[in-house]
Length: 296
Image (cartoon, rainbow, N blue to C red; front, side, top):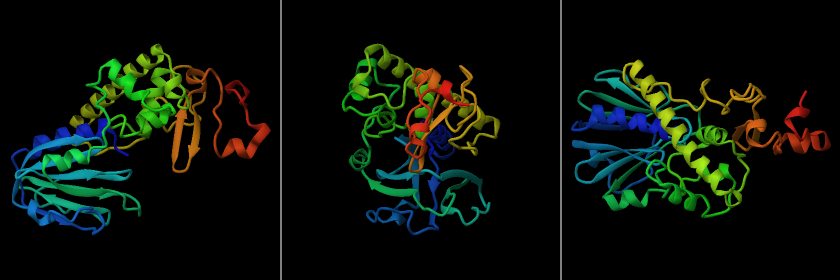
């Protein structure tokens, strides 16, 4: 799922191309993409783009007349820029936003159609669609700590809760917790002030570093982020199960739950303890290793 760094780079590139441009035509190629009926989607055609914004993990096109097109990419949705007159793409194309200089194409890989498009009228409607998570770059240490401790959840759950923190998902939460040297299963209200401060610093550092990295990568590719993915070889732990931790060299571990996988380094984050995996630990029972040193 595209997270804050990816969405930020999308927004920056779209703002460069679209501010002041007119949306000539919006073609919906999948009827399930649009999740609102009022106002009618046809009302966006012929309106100028006044700005491009980020709302959590959503991309917002602000149009004249206080209309807002809100694109939620979910897991497999991606945005592409095509020159004027170019073909929109294959069967994974869900929508084409046609402008004078080119087209913004929304695609989604796979067969599950989770990406969503909303058309909202007025700033109040846009504000109501905001999950409520705080901007981690704007939040001072005290505000961050208060939000983190507002409920007693695991750190992984708290960081990825859009009602608590804006724009953080599965991938970057793993990277943040590794940087902060904290267990993904530690409870928020058990952390001392030093640990919370370390987490606050890690959140801002990891997201800023990856935003800069993706921004530079997009510039090197002609100015568009066409390689948006949650799995990158430069990451410390996310998606690197079994590979060596870049800090200590221990094999990266994982916790699997439904469609999500949490990756962590036992030596760096849990004092060498292996966290129970919902699948393997129940299967192996007494044979489940308790510490990273017990692994063959």
